[in-house]
Image (cartoon, rainbow, N blue to C red; front, side):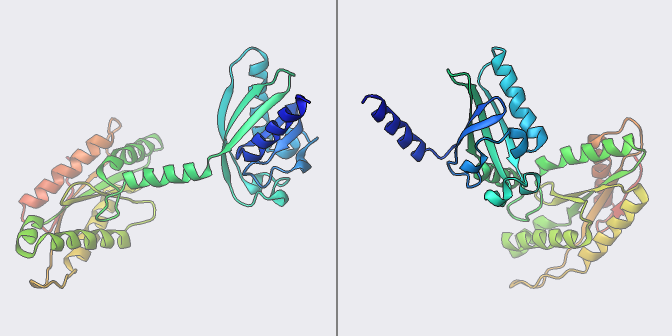
Length: 296
């Protein structure tokens, strides 16, 4: 009689559990509890892992099992199931990619217990928060902290493969005066229109950043110094043509642009950005609304 209540409690616990649970005997699935995973049906019982999962993922499970049998601790790892990689699971309900966190342990009977928690929503939220953390809320461009990893990688790749990489750094001329004359909302709109113009002109691979209150930067991979100067002139021309209707009067503005490129074997992103910054200062002090790109 004592065994029956125990079995009932066990069944109730399984019913409430949202995790997917597999019990393996060697490589074969003995029992499976679907939890929140529609694809994990009883049809899989008796099948080998290598028949259900992609070969590399099945081997990852078995590798964890081997470590456990050699005295290792409870193993945990994350993996993704994609319909195109799991043809056996697609007709059972795996219709879109899912991320799982898996824990593998041994039971007293010598079988392997696998607990799989669906962490797809957690992954999506993490990616969303990561993207938001790297974006400027006003313009939607990437923020300053996102610049250097991309620029360093672009420069390193250019030097490694005898390619090219450049960066443009631009100052919105007299933005402080625009704010004082027309209000902060006007300055915000000037920045937003400037970013929209750069988005229209840039290539898909170019990386646009709001570098400071009045400055924007753009990483141009696979772009040599002369090409970057031409791109900067196109940007300067396009922004000089913009006009923003405003209650206190129509606003026109210009930008001063500095260009820096990877020129020497010892260059890194910091050095290339320094060249662009110094050239931008030359443009500002030479009368604004111009492009400077001396190979400093």
